[in-house]
Length: 403
DNA sequence: TCTGGGGTCCTAGGACCC
DNA sequence: TCTGGGGTCCTAGGACCC
Image 1 (cartoon, rainbow, N blue to C red):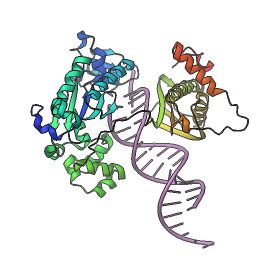
Image 2: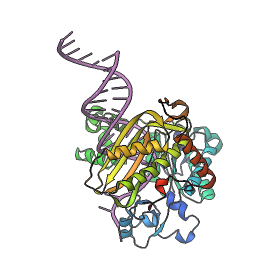
Image 3: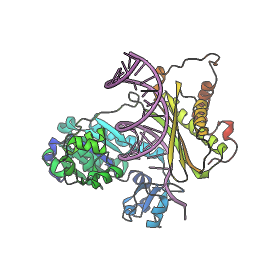
Image 4: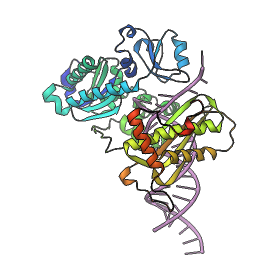
């Protein structure tokens, strides 16, 4: 509500939400000036969706998440570039470093977003609004991409504000303006309210955040469930998290790891499925071994031609990070589905209930060899590390085309 | 050339134990 | 013997986020 030019008002707003503008697209074209002012999309290839679109492409109505076909129909002349995740990660790390030079209280939320508590930096760098501009200038100068910043007293409001600040802007929402800012917003703007819940609330006559704020908590909980109802009620009434918690990945490991893949064309052949499950199991367990975690629950995901998606899971007696064990379990779950009427579009493998390896002791069952598959996996990991992925592969993956 | 891939959390029912 | 209740684990699905 307050333009960035009045820094005093931001002094009561120590929380910043920094969000890169069209991150993947911006990184992809930052060294290609000839693409800056033409429509560009990242992703959206065969059976894919748009990962990111620059602002000229958005002017045609292209949005991330849209199918490549839809994007093409809206703007046939858009330039399509492929996603380079390694580069995205490098830029992300550099940007997060800039944030950490401002304050140690940085909560990296995704590759291109972070929350910062800058209360400790005010004496050194000026008001939060000035710090926001300082960050934007540094990101622009050092990484040649733009970002927008929301400045508020609480986390969710800062996030809402950064969205309104886009592109390439800053928006400050001081505490005494928070209610006036929040209440006219559509409920769908709130974090955690997606299309389904928004539609439900709208049908019930609750269209704005203000409508929600005037609804008793118990009523909201009956409408949308206990947890979401409580969250919604809190947020609409202005109660919200005010602290930023830096996450350390080793201290707070992932709860699950998975991988799934859409086939180039739909598949019915069990052998093709089995081979794909082996690739996915290998990919997932390699990541688990790198992170030094193991898990007991193996989950299979199958999406059919008609887009119905099912999951089946099974919990093993002991945690595993062994490719062959995860593959065998995924294949068992697949076979247990029985005869299928539909072709399959996507399969996925996920391992849940991850524990640090130190806490994941296996009970060696009678007759089980002390060495075997785990050693084979680690040997393969070492070869991959030295010579690159794909040098060593299970025999089953050597024959036939990869999907 | 309709609709990706990586996750998280919540809900609900049933099994099982106390 | 009957009844009730709470807690935890497992499984499946759904909604949401980036």
